[in-house]
Amino acid sequence: MGLRLRDSIGRQLRELRYEPTAKRIRAVLNGTTVVDSDRAVLVWEPRRVVPTYAVPSEDIDAELAPEPTDSVPAEGAGDVGFALPDVTTLRVLDPRVPFSVHSTAGEPVVLRTAGTGYALGFRPGDEDLTGYVVLDFDGFDRWLEEDDEIVGHPHDPFQRIDVRRTSRHIRVMLGDILLADTRRAKMLFETLLPVRYYLPPGDVVAELQPSATTSYCAYKGEASYRSAVTAGGVLHDIAWRYDEPLVDASEVRGLVAFFDERLDLVVDGVARPRPVTPWT
Image 1 (cartoon, rainbow, N blue to C red):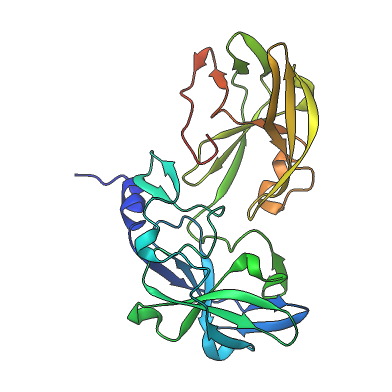
Image 2 (image 1 turned 90 degrees about the horizontal axis):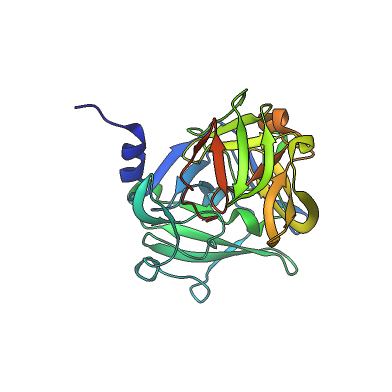
């Protein structure tokens, strides 16, 4: 019997996973490089869908002290998370779930530097990671892989982005209201996520108003959001675009994508089911 890889990945989400990296990893806190390691590993706690870095404690130039008060232990994390039904029945922990929510046994710690600088860490109880400290990516000022800065979270070596041009007829609808109509879309394929259709702004029928909302993707860069003004009202933060994308997403620069979790996407006359994701 064949094995659908997505099902295998879904089962693996239940486990504590790790993968060594050959990259030199550095992290800056309060203006000082406090992590410098060529022995780092990527770590995914159970149900986490993106990795973070762990390094040997010897590669951390900061005081390490127990810090149990702000952490949610493994036994209290079962109801936290979001649905990803095409992959697993588990509630997954996406990057919006704080680092302090842990889904495996271990010891929460805090890294303290001279002055007021501090960041959270975690010593997992697994014997394969003895001596390692998992680090809260968002708690540091900067991260470097070799000499290149990274944002959002470390890249998953088993995830990728592909962008392809398509002449399919794409319409974005809300009931009978047409928001966009194009045959010039670009399809962005990202591992374990719904296909996203990026459209030329000139093919967007609805009036789009800039929003103050932004977000970061480790693979695509900073997204700026748009709200659509329709006869039925304003659809807040319903669309986004990357004006200065990272290399992997350079082909969608300046194009507009819509949350089809909240709208109706019609491809060549056939309405697609609305995906269920953490953004539903």
